[in-house]
Length: 419
Image 1 (cartoon, helix red, strand yellow):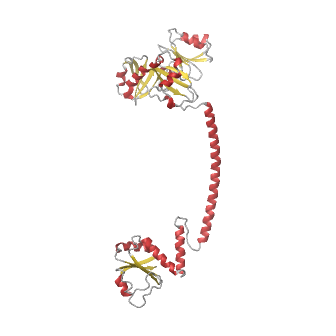
Image 2 (tube, helix red, strand yellow):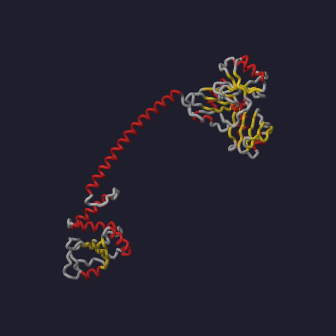
Image 3 (spheres, helix red, strand yellow):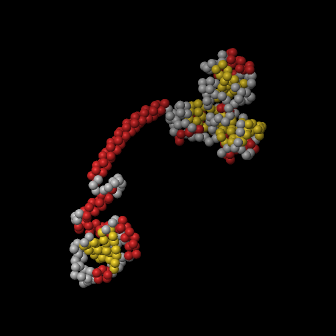
C-alpha cells in the first residue's frame, strides 16, 4: 500500500514537505507543490499541519444541540480568545462526553484552499490534523517538542501552546513551568543541555523521545464530523440516565419473572386440557393429534356415528347435500332443479347449464370423504324409475317423478351414493 504523508508548515501550498511509504518502509521524501503530490497514484493520504496553522481553544457550550451549531455560533463563543479578524477564521468543533468542548480555529481561506486541493481524493485522505498529535502523550503529563521550527508544549490530549522564540529553552515554556505541578515531563529535543536544565532546575523526571507516532487520528479537519464523535451528556443527565436504566432493568426483570411463571402455568394448563380431551375422545377418534382441523375431524366422526346408528336420517341428506355444494362450488342455484333422498341415496337434478367435464375430478374428491358419486342423463334415469314406486321417501323437493310434474327438468342429473 502506497501512503503519502504531507507536512504543511505554511498557508502557501506551493511547497510542502512529504514522505512516501510502501507499507511501513519509507521509500522517498522531499518538498513539492501539493497539487503535484496528490496527482500520484496513492492508496492513502495523511495531512499534518504545523501548530502555527491551527489554534485549539477549550470551552464549554453547554447543552446546545449540534443542529443549532454553525460557524457564527462557534466564533461568537470564542471571540474573546481570537487574535485574528473573526471573518478570516474557520471554526471546527469536537464535543466530548465529559462536558468539555474543543474548537479548532484555522484561517478560512487556507482551509478552503486545502480542501479544494484534496477534494478529488476524498477516499484517499485519512485525516487532516495538527502535527502535535504525533507526539507521545500521557494523561496528566506535558509533552514538550523542541525540534526545528515546530516548537510547542502539549498540555492535554487536544490542547497545545506554541513556543515562538528562538531560545534553546523558550521563555514561554519557562513561564508555563512555573505552574506545572507534576514531577515528570515528556521531552523531544536534540540538545542534552535542555534535558539537563529541565531535570536540575525544575526537578523533573524527563522522559526523552525521538520517534513520532504517525497514523493515529485524534481529530479530523477534513470532514468536519468531529462534532459527532461523542454525544454531549453532562454529569447530571448521565446520572439520571443511569438511574432510569436501573429502574427499567429492575422493572424488566420483574416482568420477565412474572412472564416466565405465567408461561409455566399456561403450559401446565395446556397439558391438562390436552389430557382431558384425549381421555374424552378416546372412544371416538383413534390416534388423536392436536391439529387445527381436530374439531372438524370430531364433527365428521360424530356424524358418521349418527348415520351408522340410524339417528337423524334427515340430517344425512343435509350432510350429503352440504358436502356436494362445498365440493362443487361451480354449481349454483340456477343449475339445481330439485333433490330426492331415499334409502341413503341423494339424487340431485341439474339442468343443461351444468358442465359435466370436471366431474371425474369432483368424484375423486368426494371419494376422499367416503362418498361414492355417479352421473347419468335424465332420460336414462326416467326409464329406470318408470315403475309406480317413484315417491321421494326422504321428503325432498320433488315429491314424485311423474313426467308431467317434472317436465321442467333438463337432461343432466347427479346420483351420489353413500359409501
